[in-house]
Amino acid sequence: MLTQAVKSLEKIVDVYHRYSTREGNFDLLNFNEFKTLLTEQKPDYLKQLFKETDLNNDKDLTFEEFTIVLAKITDDAHRIIHKDDHLVPG
Image: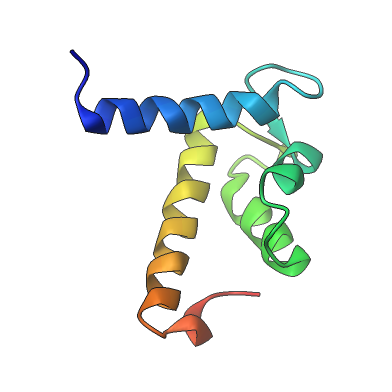
């Protein structure tokens, strides 16, 4: 039986692959796929987030780099919830 944490992590992997499979390499998320994934965000925020998390500057996000995106988005959402949205880039 899977724990709730493992089930949640599986959903994150599923979301990554739902978008990474649209163009090119199955295990890489390019900027267009990334932008589609986060369409509700501000374009400048997306560009900055992608640039910050594309650690090797190859214009694709590995799953490891994508986990950094998740951490940054989670932190930004936490700041917004606590009314510290002036700390959120974009």
